[in-house]
Image 1 (cartoon, rainbow, N blue to C red):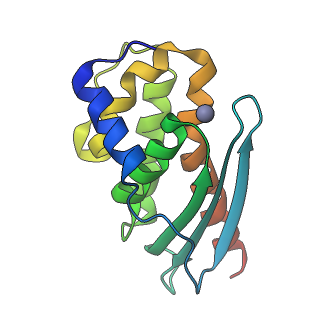
Image 2: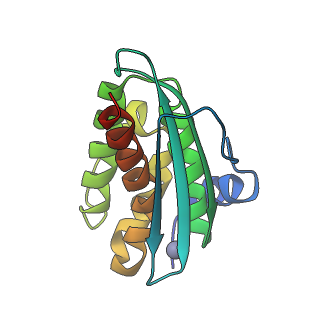
Length: 148
Ligand code: ZN
């Protein structure tokens, strides 16, 4: 896979030093997602505010390839402590970038280091690796809200 060197370094840094890794309690919703084609696995837990509008705490544990692991670390960094509205904006932007085949101007305010993943969008087999953590987080939020 050919990614620009700068972006490759960002991804490797998150892979080697994952932010926020390790499941935490208490939590309101949990989701476990698997990417069978690559073997990536992630469990995401979220704790929402009482009104269900803010992610008070998000945590995860994951195994798999460097793309999936870096993506989980970046996702944590972008959404921990944010509102559901901000989560939706960031996750929609990330999804749009991944579906763009790399022809996209990502919003860095929304994605942070996630913009480093734009090169991955050119590799259909790896897109699921990058999306796994975001999809699991979305599911965990739905489940946390379902408990209300
Ligand atoms: Zn993978």
